[in-house]
Image (tube, rainbow, N blue to C red; front, top):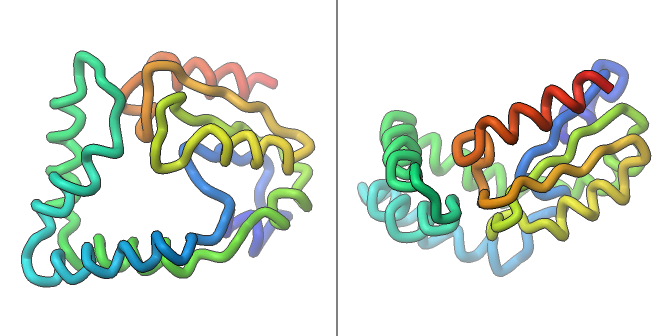
Length: 162
């Protein structure tokens, strides 16, 4: 969305997956501070295990394997990347006007059970973007590419063929 805001003429198509066009709410910004403090104190594994991972995935046969992959990724990227990403989320601008001003084709895709970026936010983006297609993937939470790769890839292929 930020690329679309800064250089809309360079974007021919855009896919927005499990995301949020709104600026972060004050209470969520504040909830990030204790997480950042824990991570700075060496608790990245604990924050990921106790606060982040429970909100990522719906129940499914590969849930534990995918959660392990997410943990490995977070630990490999490290504490500083976690903190930078948290700060970026805290300060992200509201992008609703950006989306409303865009006429490029857009795929808006989310998991039906996504708790972090619920369906309502994706319906909002779909309503804002004149030339968008909304896809909701069942039995999926925040990571449809990992949870339901076949269904997600099918949605991409169908959209790209439009």
